[in-house]
Image (cartoon, rainbow, N blue to C red; front, side, top):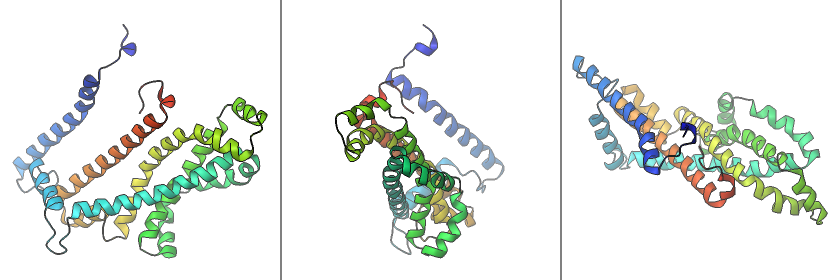
Amino acid sequence: MRIINRTLSRRAAILLGSIPFALLIGAYAIASHLRRIDNPADKLLPSLGSMGDAIWRMGFEADKRSGDYLLWLDTIDSLSRLAVGIFISTLLAIGLGISIGFIPHIRRGLAPFVATLSLIPPITILPILFIIFGLGETSKVMLIAIGTAPVMIRTIAQAVMDIPRELIIKAETLGASTWQMITRVVLPQVMPKLITAIRLGLVPAWIFLISAEAIASTSGLGYRIFLVRRYLAMDVILPYVAWITLLAFILDRLLLMASRKAFPWNHLSGDSL
């Protein structure tokens, strides 16, 4: 049997997937050890043990000044901002994306505008958001929404236009109104694409979140990373980066699981990235 036609068991898939991570950790441990042989006080590549101590201190020992468990406080604040921003983007993607994709007049009026907005680097308008909304939570949430909504809207609009025309014709033949076609034909067809759009939107959303927190915030994962960098605290920075990566991975897998559960017909081909 050719290799492209072979299927893997779940255990083999997990094993193969873990190999790159194990190699990365092993390579880091070796590099850290070699650097500390020459300089035991080296801060660039701290040992795995020192990073474990740092993450324990941040997550399970109350801060002496505030009494907070900083890792969990930062995590809650960052995830809250991310959730609100993505929620706004999702609502805009559903409302405008379906309208642009399904109604020609709206498509002609709004599609060029949305396409133009999607090409603006959101980081460049961060100072404008700070001026308009201040340095509070609103500016950070708006950066996430503005950075992710246009692309999500275009994705949903394209998904609507890709719906087979025969389905629309059948609904019209049965006397369905425009609203009924949107709710009973269009919306069920694009919901899997919406989850995919959210998954893809989370990637830039994390970038915008960390950037906003680094510039103007008093809590959050991005704020903590840029706060301790002045002390060259790589034993805190690297675990925080790994923690952000883990959170992003978990959110992505949860969305994929939800899509498979709610829309199994969209995953009939088997594997999904």
